[in-house]
Amino acid sequence: MPQLNTQLETLTPQLTAWRRDFHQHAESGWVEFRTASLVAEELDRLGYQVTLGRDVVDDTSRMGVPDADTLAREEARARTQGAIERWLPQLSGGFTGVVGVLDTGRPGPTLGYRIDMDALDLEESREASHRPAQQGFGSQNAGMMHACGHDGHTTIGLGLARLFKTFESELSGRIKLIFQPAEEGVRGARSMVTAGVLDDVDVFIATHIGLDIPCGEIVCAQDGYLATTKLDVRYTGVPAHAGGRPEEGRNALLAAAQAAVGLHAIPRHSGGASRINVGVLNAGSGRNVVPATAMMKIETRGENTVINEEMRRRAIDVIEGAAQMQGVSVEYSLAGEADTCTSSPALVDYIQKRIEGLPGVEVVTPRISEPSGSEDATCMMKRVQERGGLATYMIFGTELAAGHHHQCFDFNEDVLPLAVRTLAHLAFDMALPGARHDR
Ligand SMILES: O=C(O)C[C@H](NC(=O)Cc1c[nH]c2ccccc12)C(=O)O
Image (cartoon, rainbow, N blue to C red):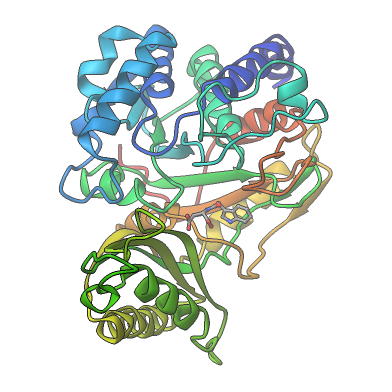
């Protein structure tokens, strides 16, 4: 569709502006108030059916939600940074999911795109060599940075919304744009699945940019996502005068320290890839006080659910054993979890055939399965597949200034128009074997 290229040329500066605005106002999981409000506003302006908040995020299945004071503080911060006021009441409390539906009224599948919006809990580099810092769009929010490309994902989602609206007469069925909160820490997707957001989706595409693949190279299916469990751990001991009465204390810091070493000493699994990481350890209150409190944020991962479950089980043994050694109490809670998933072969074949030769598409890889991080889009994919639909997870390569989750992360923005055009192209004339067309 030549006019698609023309439209895209006009759209590209807007894509760059969106990306840099989202980058500058980075918001981590469940506090994407400004981002979600701007997304809802744009979808509504374009005439999409917009649902958000508790209508698309199930409260009981949310994980790793910040405390009420943090949610309130970040909502107030979002207001000062230009969040669109009329959407905030529904987003309040961290229900920051947004779904836009374009119903063409013509028979055809419902095509769902997952777009994750959240930033990482990370302080962005202020070095002049870091382009966002140098060009004035570095994160304004302390401790929050788009260091994985989700500012680009949100931009791609809005670019798709614009193109689909422009070419609505060429489409059939429905387009469902699913803007998800809290992918980092694998927390938000399960809540949207439980809220039923995926229950009417026939074809589902999740995407990620970067992943050490050059711009112009596209992977139709990334299958190597690891099953993962995230745990918050809290040790409670007994404070005492470290000099006068050390024997009366019970040392929570030592329990956490011994747990950290013990966790990393859990053997890797012979059945496949396995991971363990203690990402955060905070403990104690003063130099001369026997530490009575310690907290850890940890994660286990496995190439499949059996391996991850074994790693989780071993981790719990270590966590509880360390508490016993120091005579302290311990509590732990689930802060996130995700499974593995395999993309639908019929959809992968379809995508490969449709995108080969498109402008800007230089290399098309059908499927990669090497273990590579985790993703909670897998639970959305599984929901679609178990209902007879098709799902995949696409990768759009782009050059990176530094690796994902690094404070100097940045990417080649040429990937934005390329991803928008390629993903939009898949929606036109979608004749997919195996995708339900009874709508
Ligand atoms: O477990 C999580 O917190 C999800 C998070 N997900 C990502 O970072 C997205 C992602 C998935 N696979 C890769 C590979 C490289 C960079 C990023 C990713 C991760 O793996 O730490």
